[in-house]
Image (cartoon, rainbow, N blue to C red; front, side, top):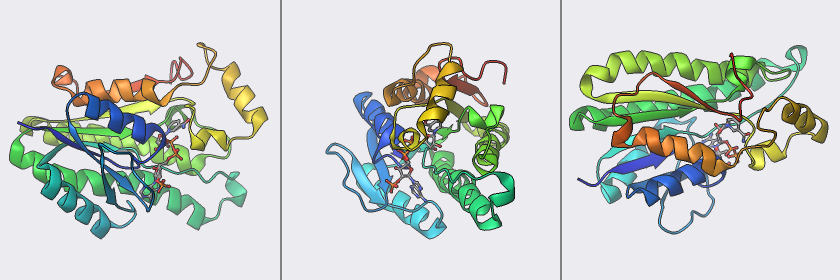
Length: 234
Ligand code: NDP
């Protein structure tokens, strides 16, 4: 049976590395984008994860072209950092709506197909910040910690139907998102990484690829850090 996957935010950064990893493993792969080009070999489907109609339409189109999607990677995410007293409610909710509610929308539509196939892989891209916390990132950390509670609930709810739900928590990875950090903040983060360097998107993708494979069939509800040791003990 052809295995097909959908990766949100798979047009660039960590999501693109994940899409390439899954493709290299033989999966058909759809990636969501919000208007950008998508590298050849991947099916681009337009989708903003804050809109459930767009999420449903993206899955419908991907499944029409690739067949049933049984691996879903909720990767799309944003930051919008501010200290708490300067963080208005709109700024807080927008990050939650993209990172956490967006993952819920994607999981909900994805599971419909997985239940019919009695096979499924839900993989949520969280962050070390969700478990350590970070100054100015109350919104982002809350959204990323929330993914673990959601994944573990889904692991219990859907395990009996052959569907696994796992979380990957990257540390600082070299992408557009981390490039936006001020230099002194990057230096401070680097000091706290035992491996002494930022991660490469391909190193996150390797773990996601394994979780999506049949080799990880007995792994569910897990939180796997890919952070060079930055979050040990969290
Ligand atoms: P980038 O900023 O490089 O890419 C973010 C991706 O998310 C883009 O594809 C973007 O699409 C997509 N996206 C953002 N908002 C939406 C939306 N509303 N609907 C659909 N897609 C959206 O980030 P990274 O690749 O670095 O991050 C990927 C994931 O990894 C995120 O969840 C992030 O929180 C997490 N992470 C990243 C770390 C890092 O150091 N880089 C560390 C820990 C976790 P578009 O191109 O249209 O903007």
